[in-house]
Length: 212
Image (tube, rainbow, N blue to C red; front, top):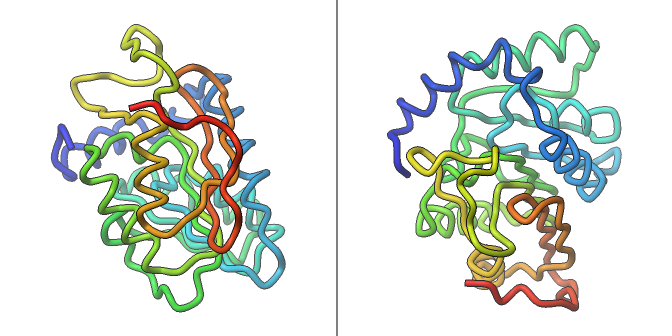
């Protein structure tokens, strides 16, 4: 992580009020794919990590039994709470939590989602985060993020090298496999944006994820 957690939280506190207005088409397409692949049922509990202003959590709440959103930015969480209240959603709850300390009772987590958040962690920290997620024993983990299918291009508007640290698809695929998941879908939104779907007890996806 190229900034401390407190520095990241403060940066997103400042962006919270305008965050939704600044979303790129690729971000929105990625979020739509995360929601589509998460596909919770009425008895499922979903944990949304790096929930931000709640885009994923709120979209999943009408179909899920319960949604728990976790983030490090109180400003972003407040935006999410206000949107949930405006929508009349009583089955979604937002609070402080991190990838490696999600602050959730893992006994009933069925699905874990995350969108445009894990790229703030170093590769080693991503492995630790994925191990933490695996320990919750969800049946599915859907990760939408800035990630590299080809050569990195910092001139694209998805990440800032000074504060962000995206991984290749291959690094993430290896970390998921090592944690006991099978990669069942890879969605390319842009050469630097995609969605990975990982499940337990399911054959791995056909296709190349050997970038490193």
